[in-house]
Length: 359
Image (cartoon, rainbow, N blue to C red; front, side):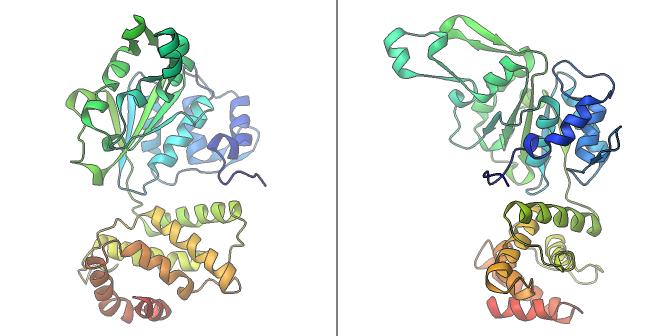
């Protein structure tokens, strides 16, 4: 077992990537390790030419992934948009790993991100000693991606200021990064592109300018439409994460995932599964990612404090933590849901008892 808490995509699935790269997969755009068709197979799962099983990394619409891959094969950047927990960062990482073999060129965008973190910085000791020079320049992940012909990932693009966002316009339109201090510019090599992510809840925080929007092709990653699809995603990811954390998976994981998903979908959708009862919705998104976190937390508690038995009692605290983001408003929402819906729901008696006791 690796000493790393979490392996990179290109490390975790190195065997699959090597297998796909070794076979003839059709035309490869310049700088790509795999063909677009092979990249989609890597993301969506399938069988390689030699019979090797390729595990699915994304459970959802194949058409969306094909559109994302086709976009990256052009000179347009890709913006993955969706609610929190819709696997935007996960898809971004795996796309970069499959296309260039390197998912590490990442910029985490925040309100404090400035132009130097996007374009380039300076080693001020060398700058003061020798003046502006290429050796005094500190390249950012974006600059390194341009020089190497790789993909740069920008996480939560709309969280940084609009003026900083617009520093990307020249890079996206001219495929170069001017360095006026040196009277030169970095020209992007073939294979360079950008994958940005943004979530729907950040709309209005720092809207993208129309000029920047035009340079992105937007692919919206939705929450899973079907219950079985969401359950499959959570079961798969929980299995992977518990294996990494060396936590034994209880035999009833899938059963409890189904119950947690049922609770989350009703609260998230504002109605019971049969549509007969309208419900208040909590302030949080109750995404698939939060469902994964609830199950992993419950399994950890079960392993260390309940003889490995996964029960509603071991999951209750994690469920409350996911639902109650606002201690006043969300507690009322959950309380009403417990009394009007969960109390009468067959098969959820233990969840009602455990959640009622803790809330």
